[in-house]
Image 1 (cartoon, one colour):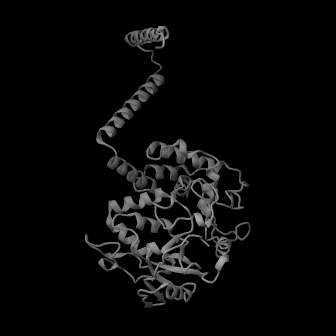
Image 2: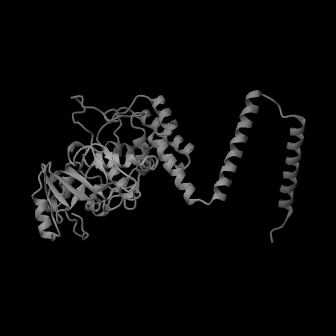
Image 3: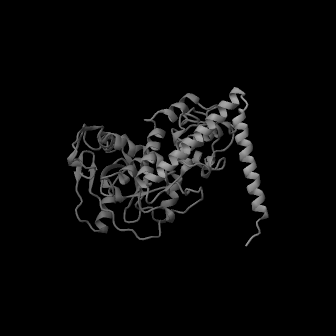
Length: 390
């Protein structure tokens, strides 16, 4: 159990089947009593600040892509809100509609109608707090988006009620693969190190997780049960395990993900690394081989090209968001200087390639110019050598 004190996260309502039972101004004991009555499969309505994360890392670029989708068309935001509330898709909304006010927009179905679309929670023993075990990226997007935040209401489904587990809570969570105890550096952490809330202000960016998520369907895919080596319907923490492995094979710090070309290069390198791993190599801490973790025998080059060139792909949307944020936070004169330098470098590279391809020798003027530059450089070097240090 986490050692730090937490404020009470009150229920805003409990849905048992189709019934809504409100809980108003309850104290800790009465709230805990309400939580204790929850059973597996029950559906409840809460606010985002009532949900505790069960991992310390996020894929920021997945959130960036969502935020860019919302900027392109606000209808996407309301569609996601409806879908994650189990209400299918948005039916109507206006410019005055707010994510924090579900009465300001309507969905095509009632909240909780599609239970499979809901995020799942585990009821914990510490005054019956709720631990979020799925849909972390989507709900963190709601937390971080404009007009979003802590009070956005969300409908979730109870997967387990461990309110009576006491000191055995984290052992049970580990056994059920319901908690991921590694930080953004790949280091082991304890439950006490988990953040207080969801969202990018609390959870750290695992850039390797970003690469892995974007490469799904390009260098690997979620394996399907084959009745032999892989008998489970899903592989626990598939993407996070691949991220653990990838960090051992490359250094993401060598790439500036705010530069689209470097970002694309990092993805290309990561894809190649993943398919080149031995089939029987264990991935991360999964105790599963690369083949069991969905490894492809070669990179799907067409899918990779589509990812990198389509402005509406997750990569394209994330890059657009990154560039937009850079423009907002960087003075115009600096951006113009960077653009001019990049254009100059690209022009020089293009000319070098053109000369090399044509096999042309520099003309006499070029030769003379080069000779003059070299002579001036030699003189400057000699002068510098002869000038005593002061």
